[in-house]
Length: 128
Image (tube, rainbow, N blue to C red; front, side, top):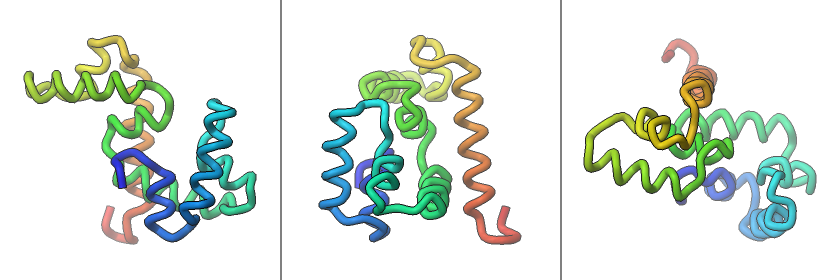
């Protein structure tokens, strides 16, 4: 499973099939504003409860760069460039993305908060 790919995560968790994911991605190519989870739910392959449950689990384990891409804040190309710069400089990825102009500090803060919240929700009772 590729990092940051919620659809592949759902297949790996056996929530949807490869065929269902492929169909959802075809619809997404025709309607770029729609997200895979929304499409799968619309097709009846995923309930709202399961979408939220699996999205929280996925987000709690996702890296910040993947979340920024998933939220449509940065592009895959911007993330790749930032990761190269991070490897060269050792700086924090978020700082690099802000300096590149790929996202704002506010957007970064919002996604970091979302990541922490998802981790708390997904953590077993007493583990947070």
